[in-house]
Image (cartoon, rainbow, N blue to C red; front, side):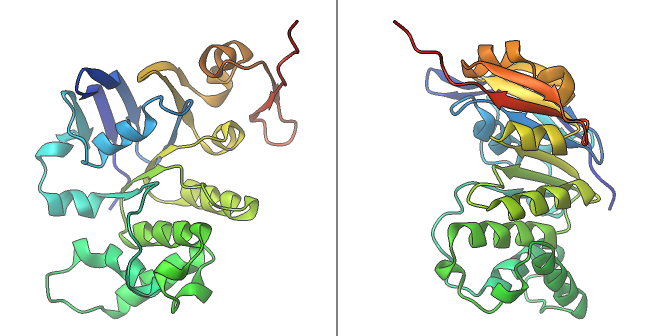
Length: 261
């Protein structure tokens, strides 16, 4: 299956009288890595939930390859879209290998056992996130970073054409942050990812959408979006932005607040 096009069109999400997201539109073309950035509470996680069908939009549409994602059969969506979320819920009373194998469920009938191809995909996904040595361990005994890598492996085993990730580098050390984001760039899939680290977003994402107070404040390439003026407006901090001489990506340095009085 090739990479999938994603179009979010004028999506609004409400919680009572409060807007979580207001009239947000974004697009991810097949094979792109598109980043969502913005301060805490800006609506990133809520918007992602509307894409992977946890929060139904109050207004607007989410289209996957032109079809309304909320009108598609659950099984079809599960074969197309995989999500890695921040809160994985309670620990599973399963081994790591069993958790990763859950990613194959959308591709099997109810009583089907694992095939040789399933085993190959599971082993490949574990290796890709440096988790082969965790395969026989209990998932609920892992550290936060280890769990995160296993959940990414489960999503990879699902073989999605659209991958949605909410802060996938949380809990990961620097090495595994770089390895995971490098892996996302190499996947034959479209990727929509929320990130806090602006320098990681600048290097690994093709385009960025900046959310603030539930609305898109800016969008474009990292060089177009990450400016000192925008960072002051959205994050309320002073910064310097330079182009890294080796990577060509913008590099953000935040400056300490000047003393007052």
